[in-house]
Amino acid sequence: MNLKPKPFEIFSGTGGVGKTTLAASRAIYLAQQGCSVLLITIDPAKRLKEVLSIKDEDAGKVVSISDPLGDGAKLDLDVELMNPEETIKRIAQKTDSDDIVKNRILKILARPYGGLNEILAIIELQLNMDKNKYDVIVLDTPPGSHFLDFLESVEKIRTFFDQNFVDIFTYLGKKSEPTKAGRGKRFMTKMVSSGVKKLLDYLSKVTGASFVEEFLEAVYTLYQSRNVFLDALDLQKGLQDENKSTWFLVTSVEQNKLKEAMDLSEGAKALLTDKSWVILNKCLLSQVEQWDPKTEKEKLVKNSFVNREKKHEDLLSSKFNNILRFSEVLRPEPLEHVRELVNQLREHKLIGAKNG
Ligand SMILES: Nc1ncnc2c1ncn2[C@@H]1O[C@H](COP(=O)(O)OP(=O)(O)OP(=O)(O)O)[C@@H](O)[C@H]1O
Ligand SMILES: [Mg+2]
Image (cartoon, rainbow, N blue to C red; front, side):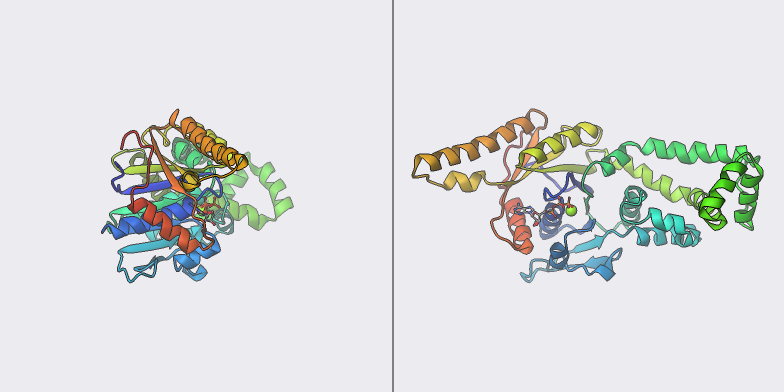
């Protein structure tokens, strides 16, 4: 099985397929193998938070969990519940200015699903990597394609910083950056004295003058912190380097989930390549295969289960070389899901890997 740990391991996939549970299990498994591991997770279900001993007030902090499964282990495992607001504070520290923390518009953008989350996740990854402390950073991603879209559209962001701001300042007749002293007002006055005045007047009427000022401040503050953003965007290269990163596309056996996963991979070809690992989660095949049906009806049920999962595997293997199957854990407790998935990782109950 060619699934050696790499500096980054990223779990992607659509909603509810088991990304967070698998990312946590993989992190625990790697720590059990002696790696120093950081798991960055994004809003796990409440019960998984309990499993990982994350309290809401710890959000954004790195918490050590040496014995996640309660078996007396002393693992080198840290967990961080991603919190965009905390990342913003770290950017403020790095850029020596707390403007970015105070701006109300940036606060809104940094809320969950506020629009800045994907890039803040990358910045968080970069800041953690700078610590040089971990062998592996396992990243759990939010459902769907936003995160992947974002990674694929990095060039647009670079152009935004490189070009749009230059355009704005040039338009304002100020080719260089304004100095810090009094720049909010000056920037504002320049804007207002330019052709944008009408629009801003209108906005002021609708939203109040303070909003307009704060909006301009937000734009300016982002520009001031652009190096942190641009540094983090360099990480994208690492994330696309197969020596540094392993991408997992998680899906589960339900029909619609499989289609969603295929669509997702289609939309993120640069990241989800034939080197990625596809995880078919919540499989029942191994359980069903052990079942000895007695009646004709039972035989039909068994056959339909077996055929369905084989069909899924065929469909996935038409596109991907590496497919891992994880069984459905037939117990309700999330800790048992994690414990059992760690076992499945350890016992190499993983099949279907052509490159393995
Ligand atoms: N192999 C499995 N067997 C049984 N239950 C599982 C398995 N994998 C995950 N689950 C359960 O499925 C549910 C969803 O899992 P999880 O929260 O990890 O999914 P997710 O993809 O991270 O969801 P979201 O998209 O909402 O972030 C949880 O209750 C989890 O314990
Ligand atoms: Mg999740």
